[in-house]
Length: 461
Image 1 (cartoon, rainbow, N blue to C red):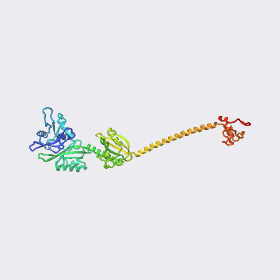
Image 2: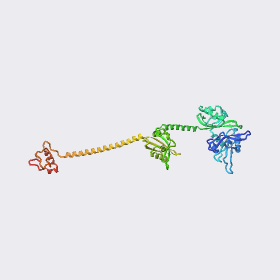
Image 3: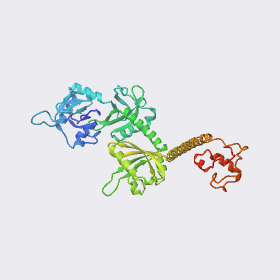
Image 4: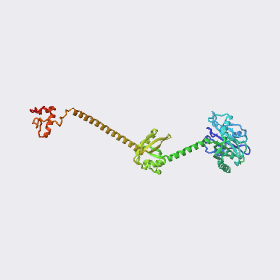
């Protein structure tokens, strides 16, 4: 019933002492019915209490269905022509004499279901239907479908049969509290399912009164919410792990809201949530980071490039990795900014860490590479000079080897006791012992041959 898209409710027809239907008590209603009727809570209340007055036509149809167990249709209003307007199907919901009926409004005015099909549909949609004694100590009947084991006879051991030991005290206390006040009972609790495993149910029960207004029994509906509970538990586990990671990670992480620039204010950011590493790396007081104060309002200096990067991520919806220097703390930071939610386009996440050591190591490597290149250039220049000088010396050596040999020192020419004026330009510039040797060497030089006099008489050439 609660999963039906069309309005649906279950209730008990109330009769007076003469057997006339006088009212209708709501036992359960789905969300679509609440929205259709404009009522937030109807369980446990009567038609008069919820709608403010009797409806004889409805009471007559409901009484007929409750007495005969045969379905019928109720038309609250009939237009002059065309199909019925909001025609309800009234179906029996229990055994003859239980006075329980179900109201179902089709999805469209003409979308009637066959009565037997509608009855089967309503029956199968309710996860579990049960009846309990007025004091809540016995289960009179329980139709558990595939969720809980059926009970076809009054049983006082329902607590041990359906409720796990750890939840029995809490469930029993909630039931007795409802019995003491005769008010509707609602509770989420664990149950032992038909296969023996433990699941979760959302149980709702309302008091059923007799014609004299005395509590006759309790009528309840239990919905299987095991999947929802397991999903919620899984989400809590994920959130717990996320929170632990959020608080222990060494990288700074924060969720920021971009405040776009206006005609009078530049682009700004407001940090909505930050982890402890964020506080440690930035040195910002945690008390100053709140939803109502932005970075510029705090007077915190940030290079404009940070704001430009954040704004680009928000505008392009593309993550971006960058490395910037913060002059405020004198450190380098490598950051990864990414958009968070399409529904909140101005939100972005920022993950960053201090990259100063890596940046300095990188700069040292670059400097070492430059120095190594300079040293290699010096070695190349030195090698080139060495090779060129070696070639020059080798050429000089070859030229020297081609010169005629000097006369032996032991046999210098002795034909000239002294040099004549035509042999040397300055006879006083050389000591006398050197003249014969010098004159002998100059003989082989063309430009000096004119300076030498013809051999003196009696001298060997």
